[in-house]
Image (cartoon, rainbow, N blue to C red; front, side, top):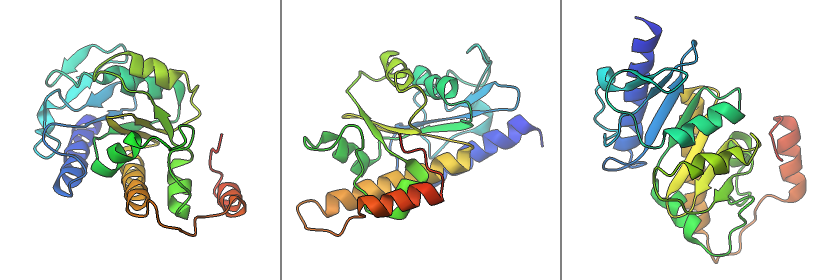
Length: 215
């Protein structure tokens, strides 16, 4: 099987897994993957991640020209910004997952670090997650906001919209996205309850041991 065919199958398989477990719904969410030649595979606009036809997944050249498949998601500028600013990015996942969106609506979260330090894995897989302001879906300004972070964050949370995670490959990006949603769920469930969050010292130990980008 060719690289592009195998990658299309992987996108469809992992997309269905996210959909089947309620991490995305309807026709929300989009995924991209960078191939070895620099071109991108991107989920098509208006498509459900639970019912993707691998052959219809959009294939774009490095310059964004559609080579095959259906018309790509309107969120291409958002995905492109991660590839441009984080050279090690191999895939980007954007969802409208419920608890992450809910977290973005709370008035007292830290926009520079939206996830409380509840578990080691949230820190290990995500680093600090930046809250970005609300943008109309498809607005290229979302990409500009990501570029403004200068590659310092692998994950952001779009206010009133949803999370976006970049990873070294698609499996890593999906795993990190699931960790973000799980941590957001914990934060919502525990809201208003005294908890034993990780101390600053414990966070530092995790960051140092696993070489987490904590800027």
